[in-house]
Every structure is written in C-alpha cells, then in structure tokens.
Picture 1 (cartoon, each protein chain N blue to C red):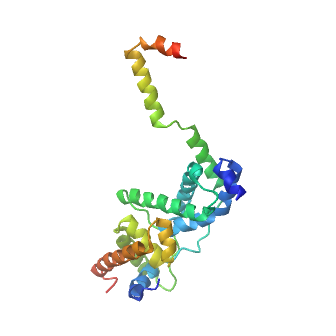
Picture 2 (picture 1 turned 45 degrees about the horizontal axis):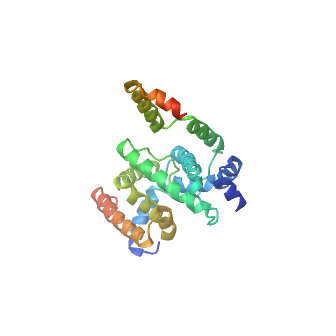
Picture 3 (picture 1 turned 60 degrees about the horizontal axis):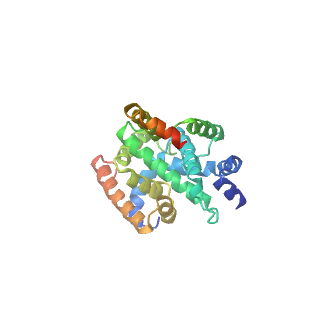
Length: 173
Length: 73
C-alpha cells in the first residue's frame, strides 16, 4: 500500500520495485498474445512506460496493480497487432509441439498462423487467449475491459471465421 | 473453456500453435526501462515546439507587442 502510494507520487525506487515484481507476469501475458519473445520484451517495457506515465491516475487504495498492468499490456499488444497487420507480420519464435514431424508441424503452423492473422486484432487476442492459452473468460474480459458476454461473442465470431478459413485450406473439416 | 463445440478447433490450434504460458522471461528488463525513461524525459513534446514556433511568428509579424509583453513581465 505504501509502495503504491510512493509510486503514485512519482518515486522511481518504488517504480523499480513494482517493475521487478511484475515484469515476468506482464511479459508472459503479452507473449501469449503476440507469440514472439523479442516483441513481448519490447511491449513489456512499453507497458511499464505507460503505467509510469499514468501513475497520477492510479488509485493506491484499490491496490490491484497486476490487473491494471495486464490491462495496459493488453492495449499495448493490441496497438502492436494493429500496426503489424499493416506491415509484414512476424513469425513466431516459440518451440514446436511434440509428437509431430518438423515439416508437417511447420506447414500446419503456417496455415494456422495465416488464418489467425486474418482475424481482426480484437478477435485474434480473444481467440488465442481463450482457445490456445485456455485463459478463463473472466480474465480475458478484465484484460480487455469488456464483459464476459462480449468475450463469448468474440470467441464465437472468431471460431466461425477460423473454421471457414481452415476448412478452405483442408486443415479442419 | 467450457464450450464443448469448440474442442475440435481448440485441438487443431494447440497442435500447430502450442501454449506459451510456461515460457519464462530470460533477462531483466529494468536496464531497458531506464533507457526508455531517460530518452522519453529528454524529448520535448511536439505541441511545445508548435507553441514556440507560433509565438516566434507572432513576434515577427507584430513586433509592436514586444514592449507590451515586457511591461507585463
């Protein structure tokens, strides 16, 4: 509580303590969305920069710093995905799934990534967090600042589009 | 995820795009954060430059207001 108050009044040491406490969580959350380690690192720093800039609006009495950071991180990732959509999208640099050949895996990953990249950033975030990362709807709703029903609608819409695209390329029937 | 009708798609997605939840952060990002804080604090916002340019132009076109401004100081 005292730490949050010090942070809200602009104390850099308090900010450092909060940064070190939350950086790994924020990084992992953003990585789930962007699926690229270097981008996730950059966006983690960007998230804390936005957090620091908005410190005067932070209410230490409410205290849930982690939830606020997750929300800022989601917005930073959303901005990145919108920008990346207009540029050449980055390929993921994460390990492959076990029990499947490298060529087959690469082909499947490319097809799935192409289908997922075709979704709007808002749908993409929701679908990836809900279906791939199996994040509870409540957490997704909180991070996106929308209701659980809105998350369900987005998942439903995303699934419908993905099914259509994947059926066209023969990955899903 | 409780909706069973999504299970088929979920399986396909997870086969090609595995979960990344367990990926740890491999380095401390605080030094990078400090660099960003330093660079951003030195940066003058664009509207400050615009204000300065506007004030300069105003003084060039209406030099008569300079004594009035100095008097106000």
